[in-house]
Every structure is written in structure tokens, then in C-alpha cells.
Length: 109
Image (cartoon, rainbow, N blue to C red; front, side, top):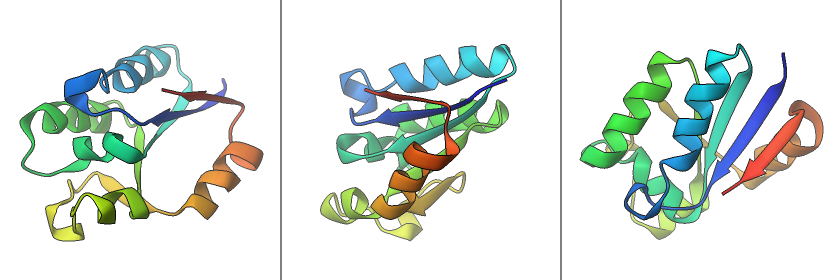
């Protein structure tokens, strides 16, 4: 079983569902998966964004860890109050740790 880190930079309306679908498939084969949302990918983390809500709910059911970059959130005006409960705010420092030390495979989309 491998530890996958999927980094999603696209909005759910612009192909950003790719990492969520891949995570579902990987979890189906018993791999551990985390999705790190950056740039427009953080739009999926908005609590009241229907396209994102569906993706986040499915990820939560599949036990996929969801993290969102704090700078990307701030640049898009997404506060913690507007963030889906299943998503944890993270830093670039943590992303570096995930890439370098805590993941077997990293895929950036």
C-alpha cells in the first residue's frame, strides 16, 4: 500500500475533479491518499459551492485527507468560516514535508 499525495490546482468547474476521482480509485485499491488544494483548487473547499461540496463529501466518505493552502484561500477571500468541515488549512511548509518525507508518490494537476 502506497501513500499518494495529489495536488489539485484547478477549480472543480475547470477540471479540478480529476484528483478527487483519482483519489476515489486509489482508495478502492487500498492506498492512502491526501489531496492538497492550491491556487483555484481551493474553490472546492468552499462550504456553499455545490460542485465542490459534492467532491468534498465523496472524499470524506472514502477517508481521503483534504488540505487547503492558506495563501490560496486568503487570496480568494475564503475564510475558515466559509471552509468545508472536512478540509484542513495547511501551509507550504507542510506541503514540502508531505512531498519530501511523507508521500511515496506525488501527482500535481
